[in-house]
Amino acid sequence: MNRRTPASTVARRLLLVALALAAVSGVSLAGQQQSQPSQSTTPPANSQSSANPQQPKIIARTETVVVPVTVKDHQRQLVAGLQRGDFRVLDDGVEQQIVFFSADPFPLSAVILIDNNLAQRQAQQVQKSLEAIAGGFGPNDEVAVVVYDQFPETVSDFTFNNDTVFASLKRLELGSHFPGGFGGPLESGPVINGQAQPTGGPPPTAAPIVQETKDLDDALWASGEMLKGRGRDRRKMIFLITDGNNSRHNAHPFNETLQLLLVSDISVYSISVGHAFLQKQTPRLERYAKATGGDVFFAAKDRDLERLYSAVTEEARNQYTLTFSPEDIDRKKEYHSIEVRVRRPDLSVNAREGYYQGAVAGPAR
Image (cartoon, rainbow, N blue to C red; front, side, top):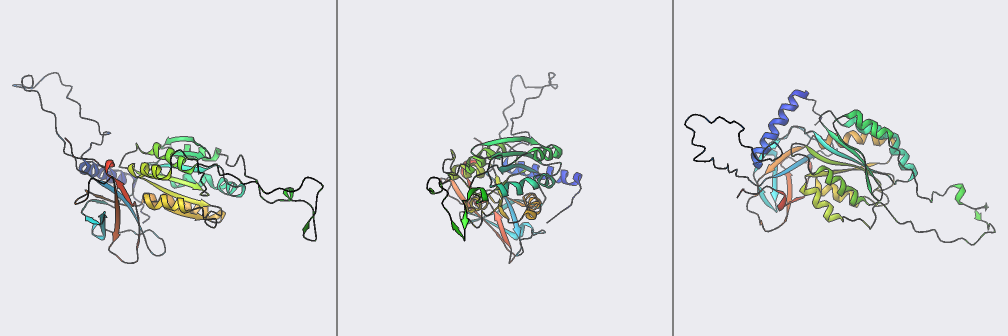
């Protein structure tokens, strides 16, 4: 699914996609602003505008749900060449008609969100590879850089300038502090024949319990707030690099953060570093990815990171786009589940698991 298309062709295609989405959802491309009256001061001949003021235009809007879809084969390679008829979309189990379909790559609006409280080894591993992240973004992508520990901090606001992104990542210094407990020689007493010897000091005490201070949910919430105003003609994503740890003191819990992401059409793509997978610290990352139509990648070795950085942006950019207008559903429900199926065998599908009723455009009154 790695398509190399000239920039001019991509631009024309994106314009057509944006026009189609606007036509389906009934909103204008100019930021959904109301049309302004003509500034002409000379009315045409026989004009009756003074006696019969022009009636306001009524725009009928249709409820629409946009669903980006990633399709992979059994080797986890992206699958290209699928058509509208290869897909089925179900809303709360009821099959829906796909009213718009596109296989064209979309420009990205991305927040690179980096865990700034990694263990020393993982911090050094990520630090050495940071500059490579910028290589996955093109001139039509807008990118912001954010680090987080207890609180998120914006390193670089949205920019289309890839050199600015590269410079921000290059200047970033991770791991200004490291948790203790590495078991090095400075932490152990004398040993004879494998037996620890008394040191003459106070008796040893139990190792202190380290309280997790990283607020992952809050960092994702802040990134979602940054992205939610970006247009539907862009693919909105959070590019998360973390060990998966999360404190119990987030101001915005998982469900609240997930609702913001779904309402704003934002997908979460995570790269899990260190031993998070073995320590079972990835379920939260997997829940965010699965619910929003993103993905989780695991970097067990240093050389994996740079390869995964490009894999994340390629997958996010090269998704199929399906749009449907919900029919025969219970509109009293706030949350609705989505299931996307592919008619071809042996293929896996990543798509958002649902949407909120209040997030789709309703009929004009």
